[in-house]
Each structure stands twice: as structure tokens, then as C-alpha cells.
Image (cartoon, rainbow, N blue to C red; front, side):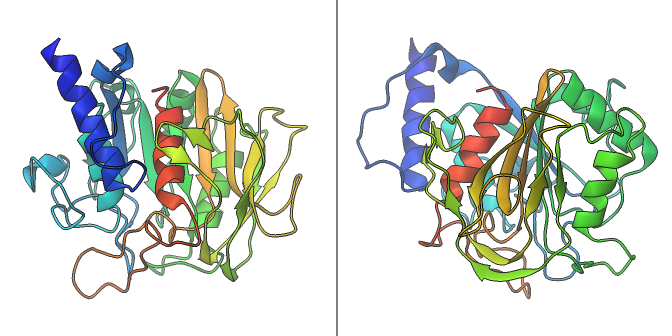
Length: 309
């Protein structure tokens, strides 16, 4: 079974890359090791405005055009390059980027149509979704897709168009034309939290906190926000990382939920998944390797869960 052995070897390499296992540690091959999970990263909503650099690579739509065999975060240019490369190195994921000028569609047959992907990652959108895009995203999740939303703090309008990521994400939840009744069961808080280290809840069975890329103990906030849960609207909503001294329905920093046949994850800050590298002149923070959190494991486990890996 040469293909299975190769996939397992690539998975071992990726785990070493994110510091989750030692070189040479065995990885047991499984049938899922040959499954390709398709992930679309968004760059159509001004994700590089201002100092933001929320891309896996400047080569779009295909990051492999920049480097077909990446091994370090320098091989792809973007503050989310470590995230993309860790997925790429497992041999289980295929990555694409929706470039500037692109739009979200569902069921059109276009190459970057959401129907061609298992998960879409939208890192701090700074342009509002159109009505058609909101409907496409909702239908994507309803039909089994994974939606990964990353917000930032209130008043974080990087392109100065009057809308920041909390407002844009909340608008998707309440004005999407498919289900406007708080379908995911949470909302983004309009606050700015400067510097905290939220902690994970104690839940050994949670697949995001204890997933294929390691154990999540917490995360970091470096100017971010939180979310409020509304379990009466959707009882599947769950906070798994909280601000210190917060619990229950308030102060949640990382949230998961389901809708139809699909899954949703939301993070309250764009600093945790960035790796400190990117395009020149951008002021970036290395949250990926920040010892105050386990952000690499959180990003990667959530991607796996959303993709039903």
C-alpha cells in the first residue's frame, strides 16, 4: 500500500512541524489517510487591508504555484502560511484561495464554487457579503459544509468602508435570506479586549479540543472580541474556550455549532492563527507559536472537525 504509507509519512511530518510530536514518532495509518479534504481560504473580503495579511499564500487560487513542496512558513507568503502548510503536509488536504474580486456561490459548477469544498475559512472579513453570497454560505452549511469564521474587535474597519468583521459576521447571522432567526445560536460581541489568555474548558470528548493535531489548552487575545451564546435558538452551540472567569453563555472566545448537515466554528481574534510572517511592511504577531496558547492545534483541529476528517 505505497499511497497509504506516503500519506502517513506526510502526516507525521506535519505534526512535527506544528510541534505536536517528535521526529520519528510513529503514526498509525488509517483508511482516512488517503481521503482529501478540500479547504477554501477567503481573500475576497479585504483580508489583506491595512496591516492584515490573512492569506496562506500570495499565489491564488492555488498556493502550490508559489511552492509545490513547502516545508516552512517562509515557503508561502502570508500570515496564515503555517496553517496552510501544516494542512498541506499531511497529504490529506487540498487548499485553494478565493481571490480578490471573487464571490461566494453554491451550486454553479464554477471551479471555486463552495460545492467543490468541504470547509471555507473566512479570516476577518472587511467587506460585507452580498445577499447572494450570504444565501450561498447558508446553503453550503445546510448541505454539510464547514464554515470557519474569524472575527476581530469592534472598530476594526481596516479598509474604512464603514463595516468591520463583527458587524459583517452578525449581519450574516441575522440577514441572510435563508434563516434569519439566529441559525447558529451565537453572536459576536461589539467589544475590544486588549490582552488576555483565554482557557479551554474541561471536555475530554470534544473533538476540537482533543483532535488529530493535539490537545488545546487555551488561546490568546491580542485586541479581539468574544461571543455570546444563545442556546435557546440553537441548542448545539458550544463555547470551548473562554475568557478568564467567564463561562456559560458569555465571554466565549471560540465557539462551535451545527446547522442542517454542516458545522460552524468561530474565533474571536485574528491574532492567534497568524504566524508572524507575511508580505513586507505588515506589522504581524506570531500567535501560531505563542507559548501562552495552543493556537496551531486549535486552528488545525477545528479545520479537521469542520471538514469531517
